[in-house]
Each structure stands twice: as C-alpha cells, then as structure tokens.
Length: 81
Image (cartoon, rainbow, N blue to C red):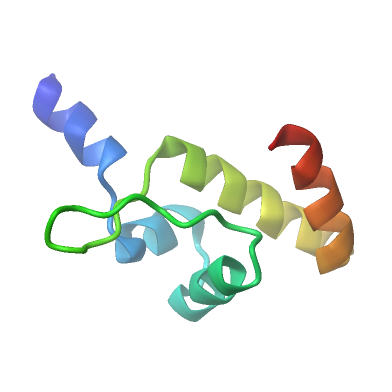
C-alpha cells in the first residue's frame, strides 16, 4: 500500500523516538555530535527520517548499551559511511 510505505519513509523525530525507544533530546544530541546524519527536510523545513535512520539509531543505542564509547561508535559507523 503506497500510503503505508510513505508513512514509514517520512517519519517525524517523535516517530523515530517512538519506534526506537530513544528520548527526543538524545536524538538531538546524537545529531549534534555527528552520530546521526542530518535528515532531509521538507520544503517547509520539517525533518523527515527514514528506515536507515531507524537502523542507525538502533545500532548506536545498542552499542551504547554494550559499553562502547561515542568515539568507538563513531569509528564503527565510519566504516559504513
């Protein structure tokens, strides 16, 4: 269904937080320190997140749970980027 697919690929930050269980402020922080890429914006300037953002945020959160430092996570992510 096209409507369902559009909803999954055009998430708001609050949707991203809900799907991942991550706090909104934490998402903002991860964006500010470069662990999360800047999401594309709509013509009106609203951020829109997609499945890749969900996967990346889940990875970052899991790595933090396992005790990796921010720099170690950044290094791991640089291999993918």
